[in-house]
Length: 128
Image (cartoon, rainbow, N blue to C red; front, top):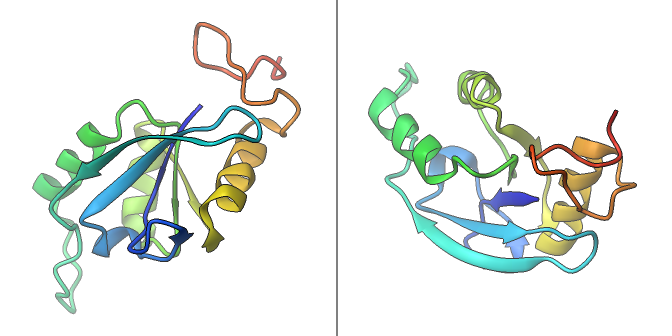
């Protein structure tokens, strides 16, 4: 199961979705997260007090994360959260060590009983 993480340190989930200039992509296989790649993006947040939706930046982030089932981040605004959900990426708010956050994301998505194994259609083999 591919999961993206916002992290400045590379060890902790320690960054707001809108401030991320990179996402760390992991393949979570039920206990042994494998780092796959680092995807650089233009950060979404403009620090504008009106917080307009920035379609160009958001769409580029979605393209970079298109194969991920979830994004784990310290914080995410309501509109980006809703837009991620529309494209099938589940935003999960968490902090702390990346390995623990990946387990939390996996367990939230499938109940944690599949060990990260998926069917060919991408769904958790434990979900009926």
